[in-house]
Image (cartoon, rainbow, N blue to C red):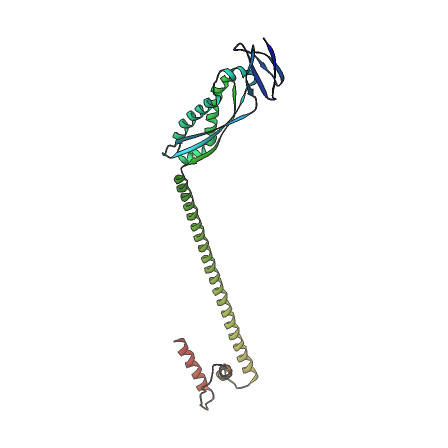
Length: 281
């Protein structure tokens, strides 16, 4: 006795109906009916994009074991639903096998550092291999991504140590260059300061000499019969008394020795000249 059986198919899905064990038709989304037990809904396929994450462990050219995570995004082709349902028993297992084959043939040709730089090329190689194989079974490979490359923890620690050493070396070099610049600039500043100080001292001495010269000339012109030697003695004596006054006014000065000679100033001048000579020695 045949009885109608109703069922629904969701959006973005398709149902596969068999009659007496043989493929009969595809049923679209919505309310559908089969004649039980003559017809049977044997399966459903989704047209949504699906993702399969495959973890592959292999070694590189420099014998470093690394785990790569490959994400494969695929979709069933509407025009090849029959092939997608009947050609493969387990499509995810088939995709995983191809990913293993490609990754384990490509990574051993590269060193560890080159692996991280060749992610795009590796992903493209996996996609091309899967597209060529799975397209015949009704599966479209939309995208293949290398989402993770994870070497052994000891290898990662060694890589981090190398990177840290390089950065520390660069920092030391930069600090040394900075110290060098500071020292050069300080030396240049000191040289410029000494030069300017020398220029100032020279100008000061020139001004003193010019003042003394003008004083001698003016005094000689104003006082008749006075000689240059007498004028110089008078100036030296004046400077001597100014010095004695300044020394006596100092806080740490207790005693000031003054020549007791009653000469016209020769002893004072000689004492000053001798003191200046002793200072230079």
